[in-house]
Image (cartoon, rainbow, N blue to C red; front, side, top):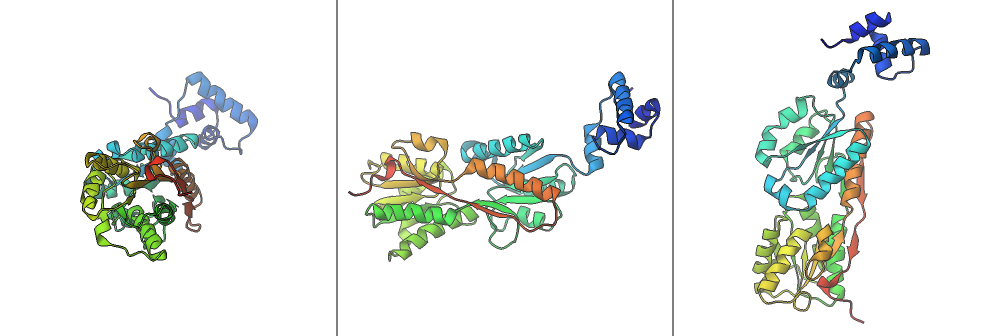
Length: 336
């Protein structure tokens, strides 16, 4: 039969509270008493109940990572494994575990009560949410600490984000500097903040240089390679000479569609992506793209959330990380 704290206390001749303080490493215990309790623990091979200790302390050291996207997207878009790895590694360095919620979006929304009130999680990180996502609204109305990947357009909440507007602007401006005048875009979903902001950067770049924002040069994707392929096919009728694509994964699909249509990249159509995923340098041709610091964002989200858990009630954390234009062969070279 497993021993309890009361058993250890009786054998050591101390109170249950003293045994608890020794196990939890608290300082307000005499050294002689600490040695006495530890000897009994070692002799009896006592193993503290970690779950019970966590519940007693009001902490589980478990962080939830919620990705409100279809399961198929999580396993086909390289962004998500990269993000999950960065969050998990950061949690491990802080002695936290990661609980990944994998479910179709509607199922996840039905599970919100369990996420918020089960007591399993100390806090939550939400990635790739919709602007009006009920998950975020429910978290905002609760006392559960949480951090978003991406700013929220209406709510004052904690978030980590990249300079998505600036990224879209720099990508489009680079294509203008190359001499392109018919610059199309394949946007991300416009009900997701990253997709919306990257398109906003594209629009600002065009208007800032006196170009019209033409509907026939704009088409929406869902960040998947298949949607990039279909979107590029739709754009061919508008005869663009360049396309800013709001993710590397969609850019791969767009390049494949252009090649299948007998067009050369970048000679006939230049391409710029967004993310700088590991495969961006291995596309044919290698992809010019906007680099966002995904790994750093994952670590920052974890560290920020732990800080919120440990220091509740402080100001909201709004952290925006810089982007970088990475020039490769898919958009050609600047004129001499």
